[in-house]
Length: 185
Image (tube, rainbow, N blue to C red; front, side, top):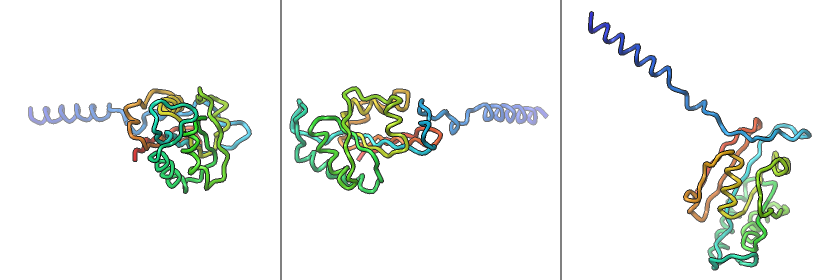
């Protein structure tokens, strides 16, 4: 009888323990803070965020060009994005950043838009890019800033972007839920 009571007690305790655990699959997913632009229907939006290719200079200025390795990296990105059905292309104003995006944009015959120095994820940027698949070529620090702004919390840090070839991919669904992926090559 005592053994039966102990087993029942332990079983009851385990049942309570299991039922009190939170379902991690229901954790709150980040969501874009801005509404769908009024004149548009609900549709997905994707941002592919990468860094410019390598240069030979440690001190980069606006006229610094890609190194041979940097041109190889740009060619890699051109191949990688060739089948992604892209709509918009953004880059910082430095020569090496523009040289990085040329192989990406070439197959699409798209127009490259220059990013402001202090690019941020605001309502205006959301409305311009809503429903599009965009590539953004910018420095690691600005890539982190933009990604963390979209996610609305500091998820990524410089340590995670040590690899020269990475893509921070942000998929935003029709309900504005954000799924982020860091891909290192």
